[in-house]
Amino acid sequence: MNGIETYYSAILALEKRVIDGQITNLKRIASAMADTIADDKRIFVFGTGHSHLLIEEAFYRAGGLACVVPIFSSALMLHENPPLSSFLERNAGLAPLLLNPYHPQPGEMILIYSNSGVNTLPVEMALVSKEKGLSVVAICSKEYARVAPLSGIGKRLYEVADFEIDNGGVPGDAIVPVEGTQWKVSPSSTIINAMLWNCLLTETVFILQERGVDLPLIASMNMKGAAQHNQVVFEKWQKINPHL
Image 1 (cartoon, one colour):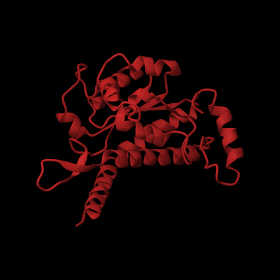
Image 2 (cartoon, rainbow, N blue to C red):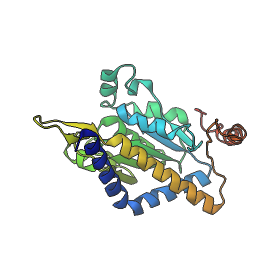
Image 3 (cartoon, rainbow, N blue to C red):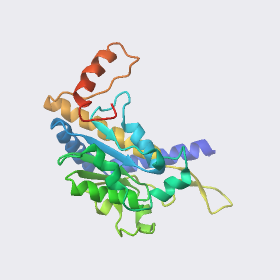
Image 4 (cartoon, rainbow, N blue to C red):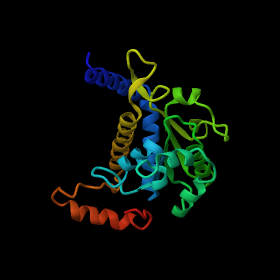
């Protein structure tokens, strides 16, 4: 096979394995998400480095939810200073500074993405969130987390979470071997994590619809009637979602 077919077939197989092997767990998490939204509470999302892409995926987009609150920090992204981002996610003390301004409430949720599952800041964010009464969902590669060196906290992300999702990735993230080298090409975490989020999102909305709960759905502004619909949704959730 050529490179395109090699990666495509590997991703298809991984998608099926990740979903089929965790369908009951994913339904349980979606049910908890629905409970949170039905109580007019928020779902936070957090990740550092490339994992911040999943925050973008979950926030303020067509077909998404207005109750999703991203914990953004440009210093933790890669567009300004990648070495600084890498340094910060490996040091303690930042999680309270990032979370506290949102005044998180007991009964709310947070999804934390960390592919290796061991860096200091994501694990610290999970611990601080639990102290404040949030339910924590960890999304990582458990195989990677088992072999990656632990931070000074001494815990893996999924070990301190209320719910865990395994994205099925391999240590190092890249999944296609390159002949003649010890290295691999093409990571799996972003596409798998985005799929997992949208599976949870869809299941959550289906559950809310069955319960007769108003859906905090964001519509594409290019669709007829979307502006009016979004105005109603935003008027409700802007009160507790400062990014809307």
